[in-house]
Length: 195
Image (cartoon, rainbow, N blue to C red; front, side):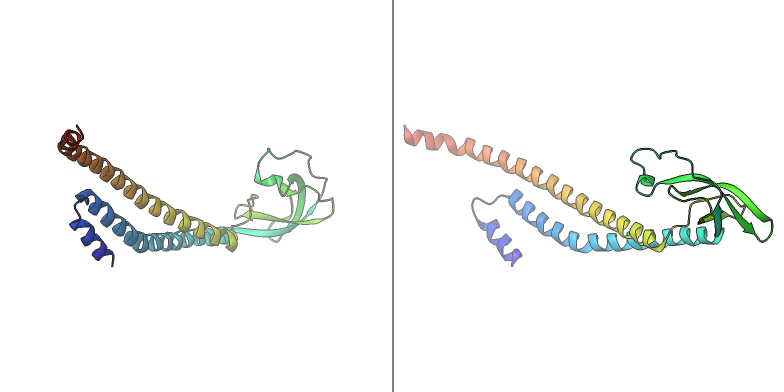
């Protein structure tokens, strides 16, 4: 139906080639949006998910959790303003845990701010025994994949729509120039009749 409408517009005396180009560009952009945006989003989401899952598996393999006892009241240092830790305040305190290879160990570790001495907390350690953040969880891996896929789909759609806008502006400029030339030829005949 669109082709029939376009072919009729082409036959009209007021229809310019720029009108036809603009109409066909709109059809091409609509088709490209349907054909490129979903695959770009899905493929990027899949790639990002696999990449994040691999990183999370490596973190899980390199880190282990120990149950430690808090020995002292946590320090009262406030986290920087606007940081993620403001939502779940954390502080540092000396903790103790039993290591099967090295016996009892103590270290300064990040703990919840409201923990009291004698309470048990989870502490994550790497293979050298240094404290590290916990490994990335599955929900974060999914969020990363979906976020990257959405970003890729949006960027693809934005690029196509910007290209369409550029074509429309060029077509409009050309159409106005054509109308100006035609009016320059026709205008004097109209003004003579009125005189």
